[in-house]
Image (cartoon, rainbow, N blue to C red; front, side):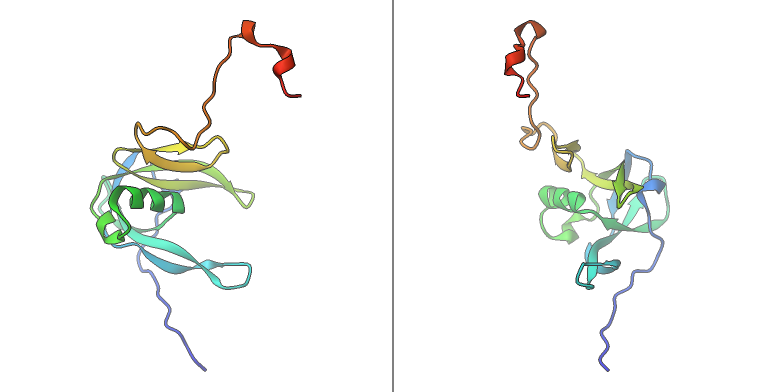
Amino acid sequence: MKYTKTQSVSGNWIKGKDVVSGTKCKLVSETTPVASSFTNKDGTPKNQDVAKIRFQNKDEVFNISINKVSINALIDAFGEDSVKWQGNVLTAITEKVIVGGKRQVALYLVPEGYELKESADGFMYVSKEGDEDTKEEKVVEVPEDELDPADIPF
């Protein structure tokens, strides 16, 4: 019988519901993919991106599973090497979401000079503050006196 070594993560975990939105934080370890308790449709374990994080006004260091939106923001701000993500000031932003019919709190890590936005189709993303918003549809307001009911497509 062959065995493969498993990688476990020690320490306490932080969840979105335990964080006050707007709190400053810093990653204090490299981010690494770790097998989660969830599985893909074919039964193989899903990976989660895990790092150690410290929050302002807390002495304890926590484990955090970083979501893809935050990973993309960290790559954009600091590059692809997660070693370079450490020590930078981030803002933890929380949002209530529904996952599998259950209400949960998502935790986003937003680098300084960036902001969390929602696209027109409801997806969250992080972009530089002041960047032209290419992911969100622009809404053009038409004064009521210029609105022709024949232009409404239904």
